[in-house]
Length: 350
Image (cartoon, rainbow, N blue to C red; front, side):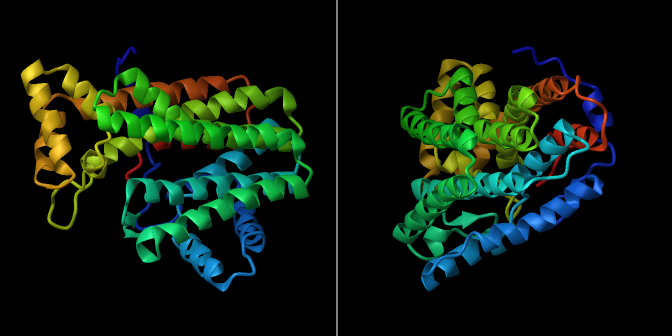
């Protein structure tokens, strides 16, 4: 992939700094009022369609959603819907489709934490750590089933494939990642395929749902591709964080390294080294799962070999692809907000 730095990214993200603490980033404050109002209404709709007859399950679900994330996927649905049909108000299908997307996403991260045996999620205990892996799996299964029930209840049968495809892709992507974490032979091409399946496909589906729910069926494919490219950039930026973030002692967190996940910064750095050094670093990656002192060695190696700079430049390329996909849409506040969000994603700090 051509990695010529995109000099305009810094300028285009000027003033779009991320917020501090948990919750939605400050970029959301620049969204059109209709989008901000829709996101607020969505929170109520989402919770009303979430809870069950089981007090324990409700406790788990409340725990999950009190740790609210950035709501990137709901934002993508509403931005896509409004950018595709600027004069049309959001329909019930938009809210139902958004809720289904968020349920699938949440289920996937709850299941991922079980698979990865992760004790933390955004600095708090994961569901499997707070309760048990069995409860976490059941909660994830419930969310997946609720997403399908919403599709049926609102007769969104056109959305069935849109929604089911990411579930299949995420499962396959996770299996490939597990296989490669054992073999320790992830290539750049395999990495892109993993993050496309695990992250980008669902964000693409979010934007496709937005376009279709607004009646702009002719733009569904364009918006899907926009979301997929945006999702690739988003995940690459997340993988860069793993080498940037530090704990209270100032040491790198390196969670991906501990889980033997070889992501783009390390893949590039390894390509710059000789075979002996590659073996030495991969040995550190393997040992980091039982002794975290090796994380600093891997991080320093990545920094010394420009792994983060390379990964950032690739993320910027994907952002440019995403923005170019919607260049033909009529100008509107929602289109501009979607462009701003795309550029922001590669410069965010959380």
